[in-house]
Image 1 (cartoon, helix red, strand yellow):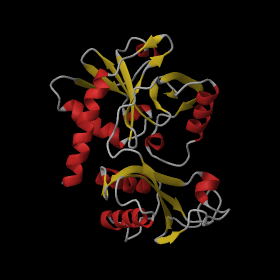
Image 2 (cartoon, rainbow, N blue to C red):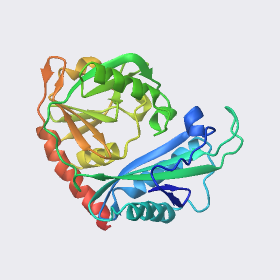
Image 3 (cartoon, rainbow, N blue to C red):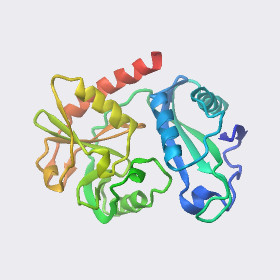
Image 4 (tube, rainbow, N blue to C red):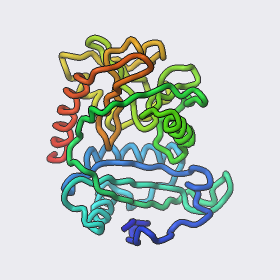
Length: 284
């Protein structure tokens, strides 16, 4: 079942029109998150990111769009799909209602909630070979729009096609200053010695929820030093370890970049702390 503006429809039901602004102009935002046994991982962070993003895009936030209302609609959709127990992937998409050309006919919004089953309730470490390469055909802009999780992801789509065609597991994207920004589907962390570096938002990376949580974990650790600094492509082959973060996988270690192979000991240590933080958020 799919939840469209509070009404549940079968998956195969056609509910969007040819005038949908998400389709025509990429005029949409989305949040992807985990739900385990009815508890949404880091829901407050996802909710407040969505609200801030809607304000930046000048979308009208409905009065009923409270934290509690959207949480209940998500859980109602999960229940309708018989996914109350175990782990569920949730995607909440918000888009401006139909009408207008570049200039919208209205700033009012609609929403769609979709769910699907995940294998594990916890973030698991995948030790499979995971080779990446730089994608340099197009560049990420260094602006606030790049920080938002919009449906306008054509650069990431083209990069994923390049990745598949060339046998890579993922690609690393660079900005207009030729600095490494992020992966196709998540934020990037680079380990060198006792320092863990991730690009700043000002470089154009996504303002990721797991990025934020991992930065909190690293900052509170006496073992590691967190650096929020630009990453040059020349640093990648000198790194001890690299990994990607997102809300569904948690932490994905990179095993190879060009001729350099990497370990995953730091990532393995951090995934346990991330799971602990997620469990704490569930009970708070």
